Image (cartoon, rainbow, N blue to C red):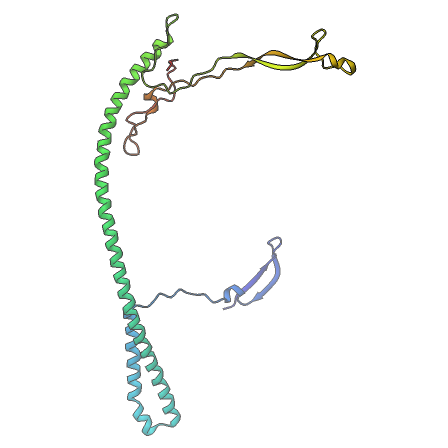
Length: 267
């Protein structure tokens, strides 16, 4: 069968005007086919075939001794020797394969024993996990009831703090305060040393020459503006707890609320 090898231009991909008959270089490369290792049974079949071939050739040797030529006898002996070599090699390979298969079987049995033991432990853990999951649901539902009561109290505290009477302190959250206190805007007094003229108390920055003997240091007070920092609000406990349900589509047993209840409560 003829093959047509068409060359392509490597610059623009167009077909170049070069056509040759025959297989390409890649088509002529030998293809390596992975060979599976032979089993002891397969090697034994090859050993039996080599033995049968040797015995058959040896049975015809007497006839060549009587009626054949020396050349025919030498050729037969060569074939007998080759068959015997095949038989000997197959017997050695069969013995090695039997040992290897035995070791592989023992190793596999040990590995399966190990895996069965691990699965037994895993099955026990799975059963215990199932019991704990059921217990979690029960306890989570109880906790959800407690958090629901907390949320009602939190709403009452927030409502009270939004409507405080004049001069009243904010209602505390009951639970430990987890926000931060802000700092108010203020002015701080600082003291700086400046040069002044001792004669009239004016700044002495432009003095020179003999006037420098009248320059003295004076401590001057200065008010500095310090901006305040906002505090972080308290986040009620019922807003920080999430209790997921079991399963992919199971609703949450309890979910926190992203928005905060601004109770303005202090510590």
